[in-house]
Amino acid sequence: ARQGGVDVFRVFDSLNYVDNLLIGMDAVHKADGVVQGEICYSGDVKSTPRKDKYGLDYYLNIADQLVNKGNTHVLGIKDMAGLLKPESARELIGALRKEFPNTPIHVHTHDTAGVGVASMLACAEAGADIVHGAIDSMSGTTSQPPLGSIMESLRQKENWPSKPVKAGKHAIHLPESEKLFELHDYWDTMRGHYAPFEQGARSTSVDVFEHEMPGGQYTNLMFQSQSLGLAKQWKEVKKAYADANRILGKIVKVTPSSKVVGDLAQFMVTNKLSGDDIVERADSLDLPRSVVEFLQGQLGFPYGGFPEPLRGKVLRRAQLEPLNTRPGESLPPLDFKALKERLVEKFESAQKHGLHISDMDVVSAALYPSVFDDFKHFQQVYSEEVTHLPTNVFMHPMEVGQEFFFSIEEGKRLYVKLLSVSEQLDASGRRDVYFALNGVPRLVKIADREAAKHMDTKPIERIDSLNPAHVGASMPGTVVDIRTSVGKRVEKGEPLVVLSAMKMETVIAAPRAGRVKRIVAEVGNLVAN
Image (cartoon, rainbow, N blue to C red):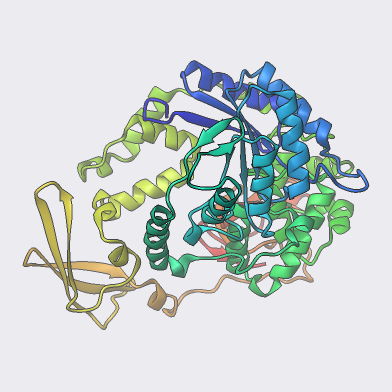
């Protein structure tokens, strides 16, 4: 990443686990990058009475380690849920500025509750050097507070434009309003192209102080809930999120720890369980994999320790031993050369279509193997040239007779016209689509996924809930792995099937010892609970 042009690296850990933070910060130092050690904000440093586990001393202690052990160049506060209220901001940033007078302070927040502008102004007054905002047309709610509002507030305070604005210990010149207007108009138009994909809060809501859901997760979890059939139960999902957070120990919630809480919340709503039900029945429930991995210690160690007896019950059910050291210590070194060779071999046909496995591809595959595979398979089907298509053509279907052009390299322009689309589906659910490419007729067969839904398909057998020998899905999802076979003897808790739904994996385990008589589902089948 440093060689690719990244200068500043914001290093964070989803649990504020300092041992993990120091590993990442050391790597940035060795790469000659600018290190910004981040502290993820949770709770309320100014809660009354002081009942929050994340008090001022908690943040000062972590900051001290980042500055003195990690030698951070910049100290960051990462408020992903927008929980930092103005008075709390003054207390936290003021204390950090007093303790570390020579270290730049950078504050990031979200505006879910609508207090973002006030909080960022309070941070600036207390000594922050950098605060985050978003272009007005892309701001507010689960995004960042509007940059224009922050800047206009500073303008009035500092007698703009006769002198520069003071931000922390630095003096900066704010751009003219007209420059912001231009950016606002551009992104306002661009946002319209992507409007069908927008999910999330339509207004600010102070209930975020109750559930503490990160802004980035809010939209994703809402979409996941709709996909899981929980669209009308979003209110219940938010309440379950707070309840799940409670039984998990009120952990710091940033990717991936926030996913742990979100997965558990959806599991609770789907199965009509409360947090107390989960704790009581944990030794008999197939909880989402992310929850099991967190309780095992694969994300690190949360402040205040793991919740018991929940942890013990879950690990006994999963037949796992808890980790007692930093999880990364048990990982073998990654062989980048061997991984690249496997990727070249796996996507050999892709390379015949002009694709290439670069060093950055190798890093992407190491970090996100399944996402990288999906991306490369997409390129195999559609090529890399789709990145050159106009946004409106990529996002919306063409009309018959519509023509457009795009350039794939300097001096090479392609003209495409949609001629016709067949009315009949073939046996595999595809239609014939006729194009003219630079005037030359072309035929492609395109799957009509919507029409294919109504084609004859064999339904998957449902379980008999009264038959104790039947094992069904605890969550809706797609079967991604079958870990047993017909005739195999299994013990209680032994994994049978892995389901995946919207990046949430659930392992279905044997409820008791026995022999597998029949397996109804296959890999790729969509199942419901």
